[in-house]
Image (cartoon, rainbow, N blue to C red; front, top):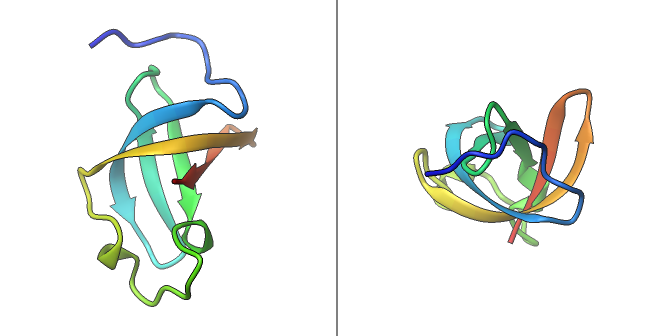
Length: 80
């Protein structure tokens, strides 16, 4: 798969793979871009209260997400 060397633009849709799930966020790597990792905050995974994020996502699962912003070299993503 071809990996882009530039960074995604704000409001782009990207494909990512879940690397790690914690109590406050889900860490993902952006599949289309080289050396880009992102964070999906737990409160963005669902409109309802989530007690265990592993109910919605699991590691190595691919997600289609909305690229929200870049802050301190960490990318913030929204789960669709």
